[in-house]
Length: 444
Image 1 (cartoon, rainbow, N blue to C red):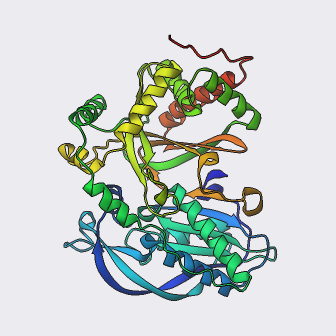
Image 2 (cartoon, helix red, strand yellow):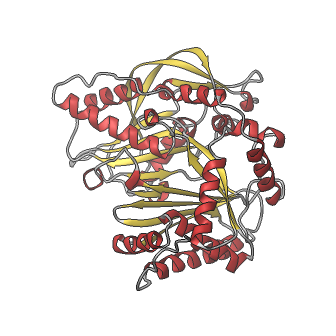
Image 3 (cartoon, helix red, strand yellow):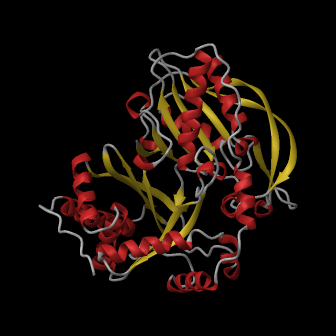
């Protein structure tokens, strides 16, 4: 399954509709996670959403689609919550509150596709309007009807979902459709609620002093902020984004690369970090430092839940030896296992600066939630934004490895990020093509 961009998304032409749920009164106040507060604190803006698109193999009545989506919303608590502005109203997004809300049956709304407008642009317009932090709800099921069957796009403001969550939503929607199509009631078995996860983090013991000291060291190494890309990006103000999607390794080459990692006694991720460490040293003359998202689904009960189960850590790697890189990954995961709110409090919240660099790694083969890719043709879809940072995603699946990189579209960023990606991809391919893997070194 590929991670693509809304402007690269291939969609069929046909009537474009979305299902608009009836919204009830705001109910009880709920806890807000650290990352939710950061995200919603930036207020309503285009492109704060994430989405997943897929095709169904045959026509489906709208009534069955709407019933299945209502089942999904009823199953996942975070889809039945909304954010409201803080005491200062719309001018106070940083004080936003989260509340329960009841949704009743909705109605399909058809959206006009303007002459000359692409389908992906029309879908983007719908998602920008309906999947923003303070929308009620901040998620939307979109439908493109064709004679061969519907194309569906599930979108949500990021405050309620992560990439894993999008798989859960699509899986649950398809399962509900199958039950309804067979004349059965899919029922509503509530999944674990993300707000319970937020509460559990709040109850967690404080991080040890050593963890606090290490975070302080990493922030200091970043000049008082989270890590930044090691090469100049040009104008530091937010710019139109440039997005590159590159196929790095095919199925056979990934198997060879993984065999190289296994022979070195490390994971495929650690060997990839070794390649990034080499690239950064060669081009920037400094260690690899990057924000490193770490999932917080540490218990199996969260595997079928929907929410923002991602926290941020920092990956620092100065030694390209794969075993040293494995240790760096292990440290990053350990640093990300503690609640961030108290750790970031001495810095007034997570300190960011233009040029922030982040690396995300998602091996879809290892996730307990799967979609039949050959039948549904699923694709992760990211939004179009302005940016001042560099974000790199690796996606691994049965087809191999591809990456997606977003950076500010300046002349310097095009040259420097492009050169960094060229070098990294070349190193990974050369490593995969090595004729044999040396046995791991074992110290008696």
